[in-house]
Length: 485
Image 1: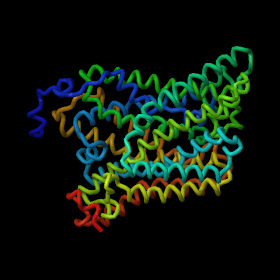
Image 2: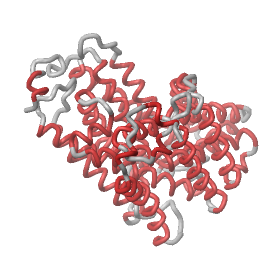
Image 3: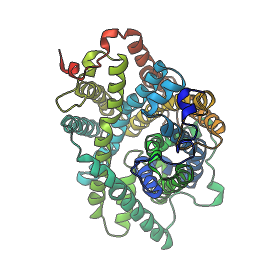
Image 4: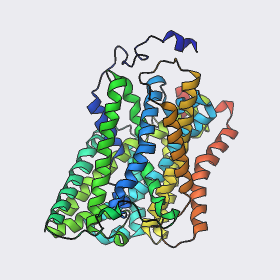
């Protein structure tokens, strides 16, 4: 038992109570915050291709990944500040902590192109729907939106947080509810569903392991729960209220993800569905059915605004964490650690932007925009899963080594949760190297090579090289040093 842990044995944190002086929030408010950061309409087309089986394909990862991630990260956040780096550094080692925070940052390199590809296809319906499948248009929107976001972030702008916070209502709840309600009316009028809705289609058709690969993307749909767990100590009684928070958030997330996916499957046959433009395809189709196509551009603007608000909010977050850790331990060259006069890590954002621009150009040269979108989504998931694997291992080690360390919340059956979460993450990581049945008839070897280079190269090789090349002079404890030549 550590001295700190022994001294705190009778503390409020040990008894499942929030600490004195805490600015409390309600468990309902925390549930809505969690839902806002996790749920969106963007992954709906991906699962709509499975029709009624989307329910099964969303519930399975929710049980084996969503809940373990939420509960385990809540315990870690209530006992150790500093996020995933400090959790893994304390539980395993500092180099592994660097690897975890690097993966949290690196996954955004592929996340932003896939997010902005969705923005491009959605925005196309505001101007010309045929642009949704145009790779040059997609690449142009990615580059313009990303660099505009960098310019705003470099000014230290904080106003975008309001837009991202309203995104749950503006770009998710209102459009999602409208889609589902009109879809129900459509079916109620006696129109047939494009996808079978009988009990025999509750499970996905088995066509080999590739028919289940698409479920990997659902892990990315649920990722981010660990970031809101930092607020667990702001609950008045974390031990009693946090499980309620997770129950409500999980229910809301599942409703937001499942019902719009089903609604899309009612209107668009799976073989005609675009993974990037499927949401707008469905809106355009349903509005045409009801003579309301004038609303298509309006909904497109709502979805774009919500997505861009979320991008701006997240743009500097992971890179900021990487910057702070690198300055403490000297993991990155001083050039990448410099901040501008607004305290923004502009050099990291610029280098990230250069890589994002190169990735965006792939959309201009890959004939099938949906295939490019799928590849980048898989790479994003693969890199992020490495951080989750480390988090589950660290949580088990910390519970075993420091059982009396003060925690505001103690996850029930932590060992079981960690084993289930680790196994699910490892399985998803492995299955991500198998081409999806929706991917097409391309070369399997080429697919595996692209995923391996993207995920393992960026997620493991690059941080290893940075770690091996680190120098004592790369540590910058003095905040004034980052702007020196």
